Length: 339
Image (cartoon, rainbow, N blue to C red):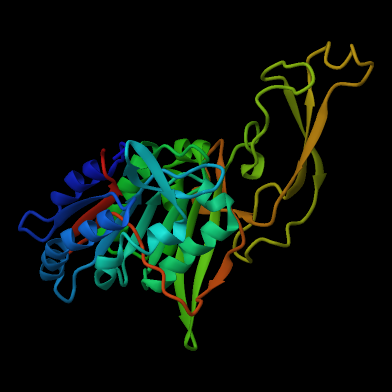
């Protein structure tokens, strides 16, 4: 298994439950072949029995799923066979690994520690969202960075488990405040929060993206190039506000300090584009839909919350492959087995 913050989170959580109210289960997997799938499934029986006995009727699960993904296809690594890595589609992996734990995932909170290619491909992300709904998971978090580094999430996850798992606060209400402490995480990745919403017998997943905002490097969460593409100079951008306009996408009780709809950037290197007899390189970035989250603002940065999207439950079954933490607490981490 590649390095993750999960063992550290487990050690941190254990101090809140000194009288045995917490367990940590780590579940490596190798499901590259039919025979290894059977071996994996049989090996989980004792763990599931232990977990159910520990949780009783009031226990809760915090599940973390960690795996590599193939960048071009977004397929997840399933294990090794004859010394070579084997990848499978998101639906195949998520319908195999968490199967034995389906009974304890209802109402769980999940964090997916996978690379952003899973999000970049609509089909794969759709299968992942379908899995969250199929297991009746209460909420889930995933990160969009193409080459995602799980250890960068450590501080964010520490505060998350303290407020949501230990203090049992509503994740939708505390999430913006968590982002205030996560500017370094924001420089690495966007964060996507998925929360289940059931209304009139219809099961939906509310999907909301949060992007770190910094005027010089990431206005509205959109990355500014580190170099001018024409002259190659670095740190040469002159930022100007091009258009000011009222932002009708804001929530009624949330107002941006500067209702800007576009930023213009121009290269300040004197020789830029002179060889091509052109003016210096310029580009602009338009504000996407969303609003700056007041609770996540600092002196130099903020977070942009995009309008939430609804994902609807389909009439099919998809099982999930995860890693877990809980308060009557259990932690079960699932990650690819070392070979």
